[in-house]
Image (tube, rainbow, N blue to C red; front, side, top):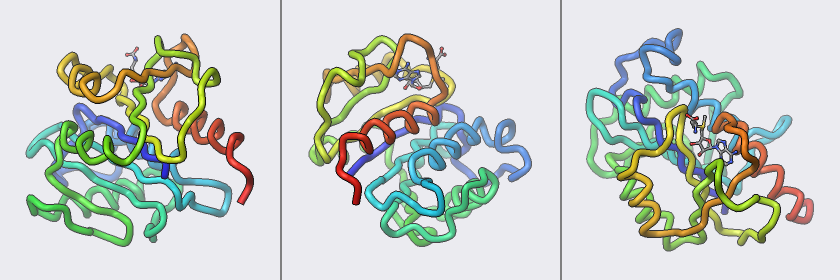
Length: 197
Ligand SMILES: C[S@@+](CC[C@H](N)C(=O)[O-])C[C@H]1O[C@@H](n2cnc3c(N)ncnc32)[C@H](O)[C@@H]1O
């Protein structure tokens, strides 16, 4: 299973935003929605071996985590607006334990730390960062979780939380790319190393 964990530092945690204003009033939720798109979409198909965690940390009730499970997903379309609607519907659910808001979409009060607690026993955890080891110079297990930040870097506290679980930092190059583009590159890289289905 491939997992992508993306931290949205300002992304709203209550459904108080308009679908026409995902980049503004939703706290750059657009960045995270593009990550969902890059994680799952093939041409006319959805990757069923991918799980995405969007860790939302903006107002009014942080943290909330929206988890997308590829093998169960329905109603996911390539446009940001409809994925934004899935997230907004998920945020309408007010429960401390994880609940399903639509097929393949789950919402909880999980923090970044708790998400790391969940994914760490399931396989390798790898931090994607500009100054890491070049991504082609290593092997990847089938079970792997990649951690990325949104348009901001991870905070020092988040980095140390991550560093307490993994020392693996990989880079796809010295330039700083958008998080969704990094996911596309990693999906492609892993596809090249996996025999076609
Ligand atoms: C737009 S970047 C973050 C902000 C950026 N570091 C800056 O200059 O403010 C989004 C995320 O994509 C990942 N990323 C960007 N470029 C990368 C690269 N060359 N190699 C690995 N990961 C990268 C990192 O996780 C990064 O936090």
